[in-house]
Length: 584
Image 1 (spheres, rainbow, N blue to C red):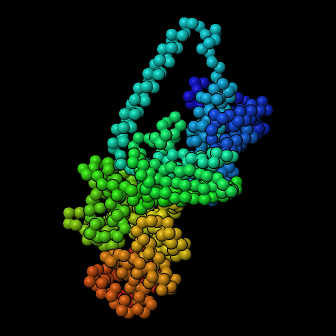
Image 2: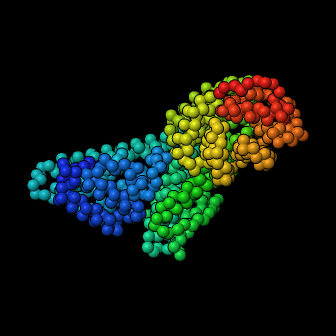
Image 3: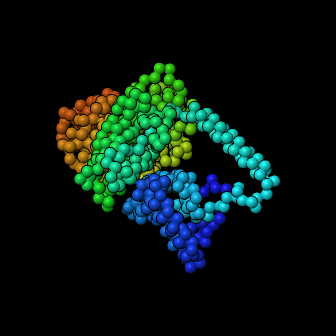
């Protein structure tokens, strides 16, 4: 471990590799297992059962000479019960649990393990354990010459002063950097209270807390902080947190009951609360914990979720730049609810100002890219003072967002969007799948990616994803309902298609009128089709004059384009010509 001045390697190499015959020497293996047992039995090694299994697994694999197998995938499947589809990039459970384990080992070795002869550590950047003999203390040894003491003391004092200076500079730099960042909401997740305090209830409460932190960490527009009440006043949280997630677990009748709530810091007003139940069977426990954590993270972290709604209701007069930049993203989502052409210019300008003030704000770049895409797909009129619409500019902004934060879901969603309307359909779907694997709990992404899949011809999978996103998203449903209307249309279920399109409150968006006209034309409802035709002729005559290419930039397969054109002809919108389908 880096904070011991020296270490001596045991017969088992510090890389975790064995001897020439593939196993550790008997003495080395025995010593290591003895130390592992000492750690696991110590009350100062305060971790969940999962962390204990993690440590035991990596130590035994190293002793057996299988250090090369100690990877995230093997740990997730062999220790945490994940299935064969586990992807370390989209599920950070191993990385997060390794961090908890490293901290627990550090704490153990400065408390109950201070005198242990062997140090077991897991260096950062790897999951392979390292085994080192504790160096022998020499300060009290008569073999140390007295003349060396002043020099040694000077070195120690100089080191302490250097460390203090570095710490002061680091704190000062951090404060300076914080001023240059947007005012993202900070959510402190407090350890869930164990109301039962029997059996493994404490470990279950701790495991659920950590699982929730891991799932919330996937949402990049919330800063998730792990709360630690040890040694702190009751109810205290890190400075700067706007919100607190707290909860408790109660075990009864082979079931565990979870209650979770979000409070505002300072006022302690509850802005959200929910309860969950799970089975205590060991074979199901980890999976149920993960599912509850996903539900909590989705409710809190997604666009239009609990945190968004709380921040959107906040009003700040003469707000500082960091809040204004973050508020621009809130205004984008408000615009996204109705896709109102009148609101669009102000949102675009706000986001352009935000990225100018905070050029490393990945989410602002991503949302700005999507406003540029909207200018193309909805043919919004561009203000004379603004630069003309450009899909290349949208793609450039999206790639800037991804460059800044490759795991930012909004950034990947923007790149998918821009690529799709650039005509690079396969590349767009590849990026969408990457984003989906990173965070399948982000319903905004799931619905949008599902719609791209459907329009590319994967109607079954894409429409199922849209329906799932609609059920889980508390925000505006118009976008999902229009997509589901199109899904039903292509299934020839025109009653359901009409039901969905009439639910869509988007009177000013031409795309929704096109979908409605196709539905009414195909189902023979001439009066309703005529109303849609009249609206389109009055509001977007240029779109009607260029109808097939407009449809083809959204719908990938030529046969699907032609199907829509035939329905629009029945509605009296598309010219009754014999024009052949164009290739995409």
